[in-house]
Length: 249
Image 1 (spheres, one colour):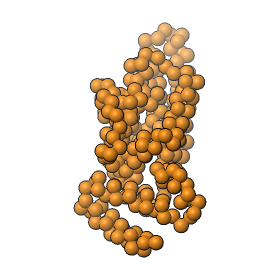
Image 2: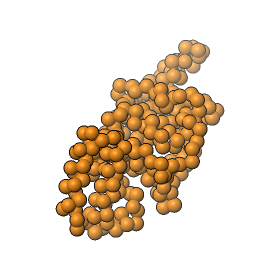
Image 3: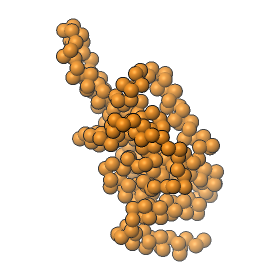
Image 4: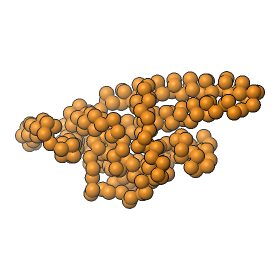
């Protein structure tokens, strides 16, 4: 009802803060407006969905998180395979011949998967709601190391990733040309994590991890975790109200 007053005021405040305000202040304003738009959407069905799931103000963002994870998995798997390929000089001549046939095929397969997933990621980016959602996302991505957000580092550490150790892999990951979207925190394919845990996962175990991750994000009891992850990924806002238990990292 007051949208004709609130929205122009927001637009003015957004433009002003974007020029001279702090990163946190402009991103917090945008998150507030995202929630305002969701609560006051003219579509009754959308309003009812928001009332039931107040943190799901953009399903596209959750799809982006899943796609981002997939791109990181492929990039980290590719890195491990390249390292293994470089080590074939230590193999016997017979095994070396097999490796020369095996590894290029694996790398070609990953390259194709990455190509396909990167395009899916682009379409998901393009489907983000125009306005404060896209502004918050674009502002956060101005920093190429946006993923080193405190909450995302903590999430990596809590899942057994390199942010929980002193190796510094996440901070020092090289941004490889052609794999720009695949840089970020550890996945189950991270070579350092595989070496640290001293075992590789079977396809069944990988599938189980995916299901756990999906169930965690969609379980209504996990709203705090879900919103923390969503806001860190989208906007990069530092929130003290929803601080997670701190893992070493």
